[in-house]
Length: 320
Ligand code: CP
Image (cartoon, rainbow, N blue to C red; front, side, top):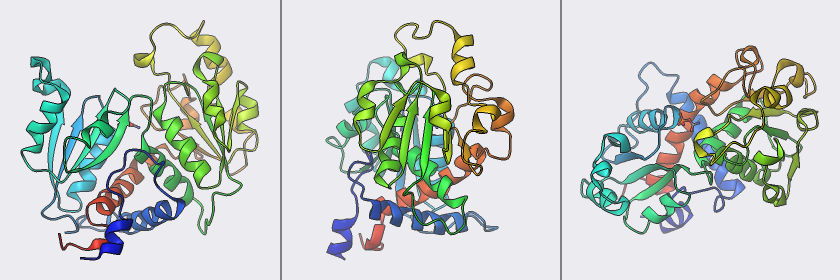
């Protein structure tokens, strides 16, 4: 046993509030090691052999779920998967009983996505397993922010610091856990974040975090930015119509090649997916040389490998 390493090892990843810049840097270092594993012919290491990871998705997902499962299997962990649509939730089983049922099958860590903010926190009271938040309502999506920042950092050889870096996040900020987690992470690392969207999709309180600015003008957000992230309109979280006209929204807020011309000459274009081409992002920009959308997906695997490894093993070794 190594009590010091164990004390430093975070128990869960519910959001990024409790993660220090030093812990994030250590996670990125581990991600570098995992990224190297993913370049090998045999993309598998025994690091998590004997552990079981459960993926509990109460909301749809393509990228997050598949990359967590890939990340677990690439480290030789076993995976059990729960998808709400194919479960006994429809027969009236509660969230607690659902977790207790799956927990009886002895997983060590659960990756949880849920439409209700705070659901992953609630699950920590009902299981001894580690919990990773894979997106809870509009509140947090910490691994998306980690892979976004990691993608930015790794595109610039010799990159040392986020100090002075400007990130613009454009679109439906109000309903976006990705915007909230990225604003939290990038400012924690020293960057400035500008959130941009129409008044109905840009809550004032998000501008209260130090290092975060709000604007309703796309040109102001993008000017001089080193990274521009487009967000889709989350119609599924809107109680009613929040935009008078989709055509007007596209004209004012679509991230286009013309808009990117105002950014830093080396600016990168990010999108967490799923994309609605030619709505929040110009299709040609998404496919262009400044776009790192595919790299974000690829980096999701090593970053999530690092998250699983850090929570399950960390500096402690395998003496559990
Ligand atoms: N970015 C993201 O969370 O994508 P999925 O909904 O496909 O997991």
